Amino acid sequence: MYGRRGSLEQRRLALSEAIHEAIMVALEYPPEKKFQRFIALDAFDFIYPDDRGEEYTIIEISMFEGRTDAAKRALIAELFARVEAKAGVSPHSLEITITETPKLNWGIRGQNAADLALNYRVDV
Image 1 (cartoon, one colour):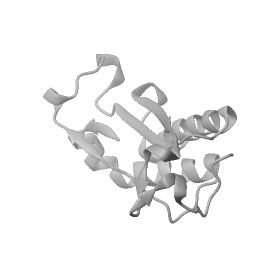
Image 2 (tube, rainbow, N blue to C red):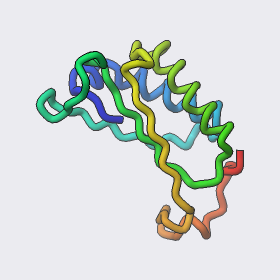
Image 3 (cartoon, rainbow, N blue to C red):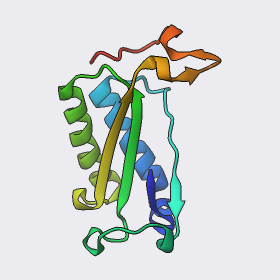
């Protein structure tokens, strides 16, 4: 997540909960798998259109490829709804990007992700 320092600091817990809930619902993700980064920027380091407001937030999600288009659409819809309800960021002030890469391009827990046994499904 990227946003203005004051906005992220004020909304950190609410954003964290909203995003994780959306991922669990839309992607059938396990509750214990929570990986998030908050990148708080000073106003002069974060340039965006004036009509987005000071709460303008960018959510970037990196994930293994394999989710269906329907699952990704559901995730985006869940994010817009939950972030607005829990953190007070309007959909107009929220940008979401999903980046998918093959498991082979990830290294996790000392091994290539293509060789990991996961406790959740990617093909949702």
